[in-house]
Length: 114
Length: 113
Image 1 (cartoon, chains in turn blue, brown):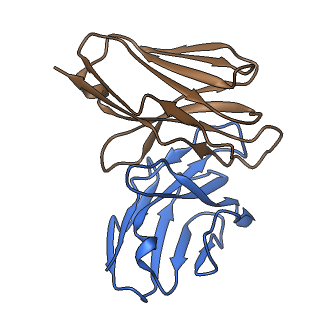
Image 2 (cartoon, helix red, strand yellow):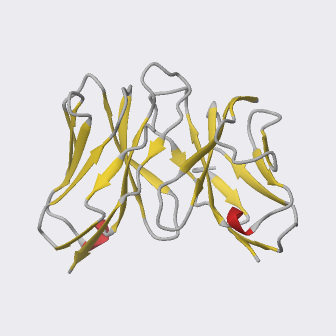
Image 3 (cartoon, helix red, strand yellow):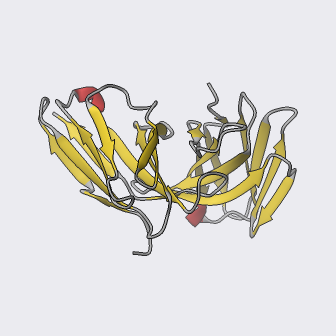
């Protein structure tokens, strides 16, 4: 596709449920990033993939957060046993190479935990 | 923290005026980027300036970088109502090849017709 695609755009879940957020990066992009953006804040880094390898997951807030990119293309961010503080917009970005490159962002998934 | 901080937090101007936003960061960088975000949308890349560059232009945008002061500025000339958005600076980590970006809280720009 022309840009980074994220689905769903909106997700409402009850506290304690598991959720899965999907990201389709730009075709051929090596690097894929997940960020979390709270209301009125800038994005905060969660994790980074280079092809299928997860090279940095230092931003994941707890072991309830898990991300994968098994074939080096589509990525899924999974949150288990959701809590209210997980409510945020989750942004996915991809870039052509490893670093020193612009990142192309999707429109995000707005997650609301009730 | 490496996080950049934008100043001012909010800026309100008339169409045709220039808008200047500033960004400060804390540690060494390879490059600094500016992004724009419209409400409810993802971030759009505007411009990337490398640590060995001092100034860069793209259309109505002018970015400066002063690595000695660890600061950058974004100037939008002849602003338009369509420029209304949040603007973020983002820095990477000097010496790192991982590409992780650190964002500030952004400047909310409002341009009145």
